[in-house]
Length: 87
Length: 87
Image (cartoon, rainbow over all chains, first blue to last red):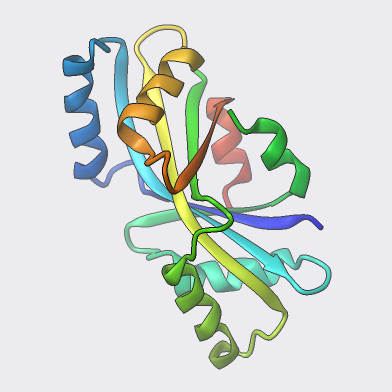
């Protein structure tokens, strides 16, 4: 059964101290070729029946994202895509 | 320039109280067809040069995910995919 994935990221103009902290830690690990790190949320929603993108968008807007500082995208993901891409 | 996206999700056997709280709030919004909600992190890494998936995997393993309770996937995303999918 496909699931709906909501990606929530801070708007590009909003500072992301958490991502900045990770970026600042990288040189200590010997990583010097990273320009920026941004940390957001990924929410997986499983529906009992057919996945409903409009319904998911409504949930994201009301419960999952803060539209003042965050952007979100809603998309369908096949259930097996996740296992396939797993590293 | 493509960026690397790291998706970090709790392993399926680990309880997700945050996702459960969202799922429990949905009926109050009139949403009754959601079976489960799982909340994880999405990290976008921009490299100064060519995106390096192996390097990103190393960063995810050392800094971004807790391999005891979390799984992560690493993938390339075209820079314009994000804007295109924006709702």
